[in-house]
Structure formats: structure tokens, C-alpha cells
Length: 434
Ligand SMILES: [Zn+2]
Image (cartoon, rainbow, N blue to C red; front, top):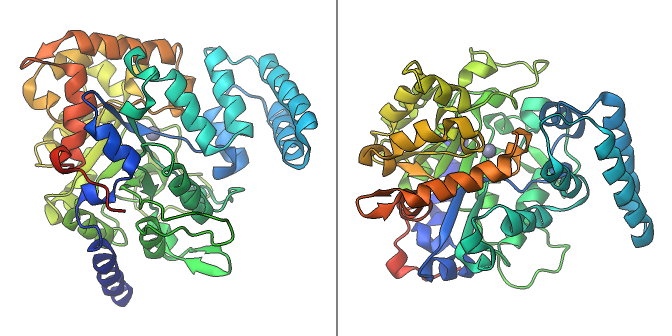
């Protein structure tokens, strides 16, 4: 492993020296958005579609209300959809719509059904468009050019043990192509087990480090598809420890070293434990997968790389914020402790879909030291399990816009100033060169 480490480090340095600063790794769409007088950044959202995830296991975890027989019917419909012509596809769309309506989705709403339909039949780009049309505050809906999103990818195969319809390398490519038309700052999810379990694509094998290098090239990977011009490299890295590994996994350390050196932001999951490792997969981390969700586990990483740009996704999670109301949360103080590191932030994605924690969260955000390290994020579309999620996130934005701290609204701090600082972007000199 040592050899392959130094090999990776040398290759990564050579590659990233082509665009050493964060602002050199953004697309012209992102550069344009940053030049608008008013723009917003969602630092945590997802656009992956059904084909990007291992099918059965994922549907069971995310859509717990759907009975097995219906899941099988949905999968049959999706299979048919792909092989049929347009008029037949319309009919299948109608059938799916009807089928989803027969399911008792409990708290899940009309909006969830719309998301599910796109998720099952659409592509990643369609998931992004649905977000831009529906899940940004009103002031931005007619001004897509002002909205920058951060789609976080998921590579669920190593933690779940079955394969997605769309190869992960293919997904990376698809996201790069979306970046040619939209202001996105995509993050590639890296699972350390890819070191021993590479992905095969076009008869080539891509291990953990090859995936990183491919994501951060500006080249397009699918030579078979006609692509005009270069694409933009990925912007950040997503780590999801509760799929079965420690943040300080030795296979990840060379990656964090590069991320620190080139100011590549890393976002981790530290919230709910719905999407954890499949219990049938051996876990060698020494901890149960639900326990890999601890802020302290990042300390060895931050001791080694104290300037790492790290975002603690979900700020500890909804349950912890409920406990914070009575001062009994242990995780939130631990997250705040990590945020004392220069470049460690936390995002409020998913938790703002829960209205009952808005007040406590806003009371923390009135403290300048917490506010300056907090990032806006939604966790679209994973938040669709929450009752009234759309109303709740948009209401939170309104509330945040009404409260000023140091002369600026909480909304502006978390959706503009702080994400720009976390991403290390110097907006006075943004000039895309890739
Ligand atoms: Zn998420």
C-alpha cells in the first residue's frame, strides 16, 4: 500500500497543479453566479437517480412505507420503461403514478410522489431541475443563474454489496456533463473499500485513488459519447462513515492530505442513521456502523491535517437538536468543539425539514461564533421522508432572512458568506480557466 500511496500523491499533485486554487476548479456557470450581486449556495443536496443506487436495498431503506410486492411492481415498470417507445413510456408513467398513489405513504406527501416519479424514471439532470424549480426561496426561482448547488454523490456498492444499474465511473461522467449547463460544485463520494474492490469500466479497473484522479480531471471519461470541449473537475469529496468505515481509515489519509494541500472541501455525514451499512457485509472498522457517526472520530484526521476544509453534514442530526432544547445533547457540543478548527464547518441540511427544531437552531445561530461556521444545505431529495419538508425548509429560510446578526441576515451568512469562505473561493478574482 505504501508504494501505491506515494504514487497516488505524486499523480494528484501533478494533476492539481494545473488548477491549484478552488476558484480555478469552477465552471463558467459557477463563476457567473458568484459575480451576481445576490446568489445563494446550497452546500448539501443530492441529484442521484434510481439507476445510480443498488436498487432493492435502497428502496427498502429510503421508502420504508412501500411494501415489498409494490417495490417489485415498481422495478418491473422501470425495466419496461427503458425498452419502450415514447407513447408506451407515457402509459408507464401513468401506471407508476397510479401505483405510487395506492401506497399508504403515511407522512409522505404529493411532493414526495413527484420526487419519486422523477427518481425512478428520470436522470440526474431532471432531479436537479426539479430542485431549481421548487426547492429554492422565491427570490431565486426565476433566477437560476444565482443558485449554486453542491450535489453530493453516493457510492453505495461497497457498503451494500449489490450493484447499481449505472456504473459509478459513468455517474461521475454524467455529473461532469451536467456541470456544462448548470452552476454546480459536485462532490465525489469515496469509500476506502474501493482500494481493494475497484470498479471495472470499459475493461479498465479504477481503485479508490483512480476514482479520485478521474473525478478531478477536466477530461471526459466516456469517449464513446460525443462531448464537445472539456468538462470541469469535481470540486469536493464526500465521506459517509456509517456505511462501514472510520474517517481515519488509513486508506483515506493520503486523500485528506491532498485535500488539505489543495483546499479541496470534504463533507461528511453526521446525522440520522437510516442509510447505514448492510448488516450482511463484514465491517472491519471495529465499531458498529451506527457508531461511526461520532464527531470525535474525526480528531485523528484533523490532528494530522489541521487545515482540512471539513463540513459536518446535518450538524449532529435531528434527534440531537431535540435534545439540545433541554441541554442534553452530547453530539452537538462535540461538533462545536471540532468547529474550533480553522476550517471546520457544519451544515443544517435535513434538520431544517423538522420544524420543531427551528427555534433552538436559530437561537444557536444568533451566537456569532456558531453562525460564522454554519452552512445552508437542504439534503434534497433525501429529506422527502419528513412531513411537510418543502414548507418547512422554505419557512426556515424566511425566518433566517428576518434575523440580523452583525448587520447581515442569518440567511446571507449561511447561504452566501460562509459557503464562499468554506470553499476557499476568492470571489473578487473568480475567473474560470477550465
Ligand atoms: Zn445528504
